Amino acid sequence: MSTPPNITLGKVPEVTFGFWCIKILATTLGETGGDSVSMSLNLGYAISSAIFIAIVVAAVFAQVRARAFHRFLYWFVIVATTTAGTTMADFADRSLGFGYPGGASTLFVLLIAALGTWYWAEGSISVNTINTPRTEIFYWVAILFSQTLGTALGDWMADTNGLGYENGALVFAAGLALVAAAYFFTTISRTALFWIAFILTRPLGATLGDLFDKPVADGGFAINRFYASAILAVIIIACVLVIPQRAGRHPGEATS
Image (cartoon, rainbow, N blue to C red; front, side):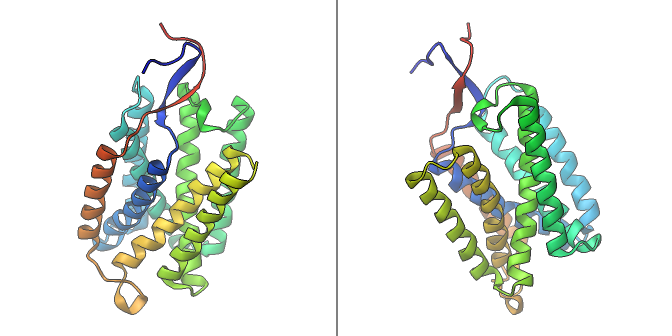
């Protein structure tokens, strides 16, 4: 099917049910993958964060340089940001001593600042407007902060509030259900709902990841982090191959 002359294609996928399924899987992999490097390999949060931030920078550079939407490249960047978010949040909360409330509050401010700067510069923070390298960079900066904030929220809910990983996951799943209901039955801004859902999928993935790999004594299933990460990676690759995806569309000038 040809693209209408007044529509151009972006380099991020359309937001569909399949998009959210892969996003939750990716955030779960980010938790187990980040913990594998920082904890299982004993590299610590600072070194692990430095490694993953370098991967994020390289991945975003490749994504921005790409001329069209590439599904595997896009989801690789998502996984990279969520893995970096895991170690960055742990570094702020534990190594720097911010604690879960302080870390979550600081990251919330950073995310709002990133979104506010994007809105001030472009006039919109909708994913449907991502059609230039500058808007892509704004998008990925906001994604990184949202992934890191989501990690802090997940740890805060599961650990500090004593809900445990299973109940924490149920709380965030309920939150996503409310966002879905708001999407279908209200006129609340779709852009606002997107960013709320994007943030909430991260702590859902964080609590699910912790549920898989944390010791039984701490309420987890004690699955080896490397095995869990490998299984999740295979599932994500299968989903990216099977679930239909296409570049998001937005108004723009006709391309020749």
